[in-house]
Length: 88
Image 1 (spheres, rainbow, N blue to C red):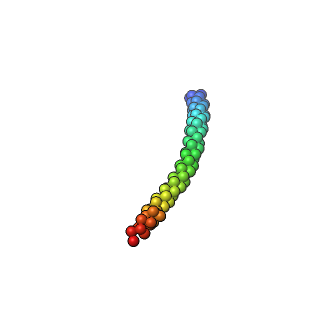
Image 2 (image 1 turned 90 degrees about the horizontal axis):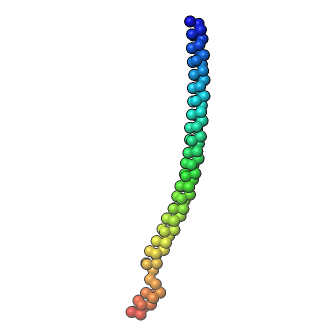
Image 3 (image 1 turned 90 degrees about the vertical axis):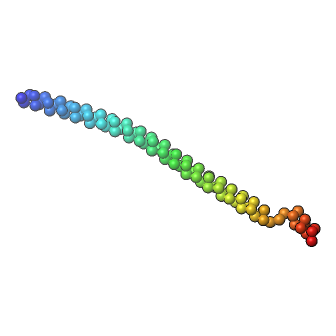
């Protein structure tokens, strides 16, 4: 009975060691994958941030152009002023 118990302890110990080793391998593999994806995510977020800044600048430019167009449509051109002056 003692031999059986000792043999069983050895087998359990061996299996436990193999299981720990396998768990470490799986953990390492998943850790590498997660690190790669986090790096990709960080790069994509930086790209998105840059694109947001560019879009904001484009919006400001469009807004400025639109305001300039509105102001110009309110101010009569030189020809319009001469036409009105000629009618008086």
